[in-house]
Image (cartoon, rainbow, N blue to C red; front, side, top):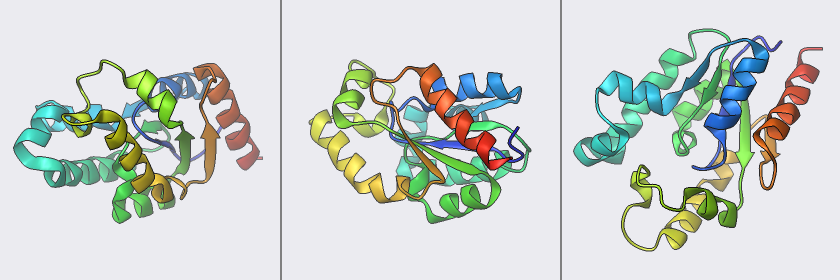
Length: 172
């Protein structure tokens, strides 16, 4: 079993929460959804936080929650899609855990997010161009991971098994 947290990064819709739950169950450790922790700490939804504090305020809450979570020992942590854009977040993730990037293609993201209303960064305007722009902006941040897993056309179980093979190889 890995000794430090597994930190799942990737664009919204990449499967971080679904894969994270399966991994945590297989590793018999807690699953922590960073966005859910932020909502709990703030007492407001992500949409409300963005509306009231803006992205800068949300990112500050995210940074604080992430730092706190990473002090809690072994867990599988699903970050928000933009957590990697903050240099401090990347440093603390890198020094306290194994960073796993779940890659997803633009067509897959669009198919997975079709009809959702809980993604404030996709509100208004042309969602396709906004998603593509965000994915392009974040790619070099996502690339700074210990392992990158392509999630396109793979089941949650297959992605989880691929990650487990990698992390078990680390602890040999």
